[in-house]
Amino acid sequence: MRSKDPSTLRIVDIWGFKSTKSNKRYIVEVERFSNHFLGLKFYWKGVAESKNRYSLLTNDFEPRTIVMSCVYIMLEYFKNDGCASFGFVAAEDLDESRGAVVPNRRFRFYRRMMLSLFGAETFVQGYDVATSVYLLINREMLMRNRISVSLIEAEISKLYEGDYSLVVEE
Picture 1 (tube, rainbow, N blue to C red):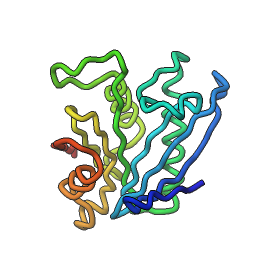
Picture 2: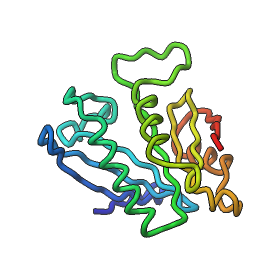
Picture 3: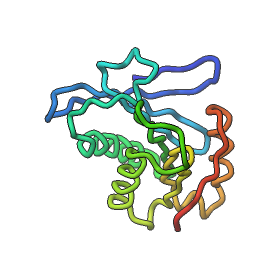
């Protein structure tokens, strides 16, 4: 399913899947940015109306299954567009406080998964610990100067308030 936000001209593809472990339905929003950049967000359908839907935990202890479903969606986009890059934000748990700049639980988990699943030949991995942003930047597009870290930072800054300082791991 696809939705369009007329105020920002953003296009968001909506995907759904059902967990085989908990039997819960999840929604994945894939937001399209310029230069083949896609941002992924997901949440449990049961909290779809909550403003905190990305932060709420289901306590079903199946994050690997859920994140792998998102990875399969990413791979589907990459199969159709070999220039695609991806990004996501690891939302903080509602009980986490904003103290020192340390990676939150989700960020650490996402980072471990992405590092174990994606090698350096296709994607350059980047992140911003302070904002819990994680990126898989298409290496070929980066080498051809079709996309850059500063361009990604600028795109994110247009839509989401905050200062972004992305670190790239070659």
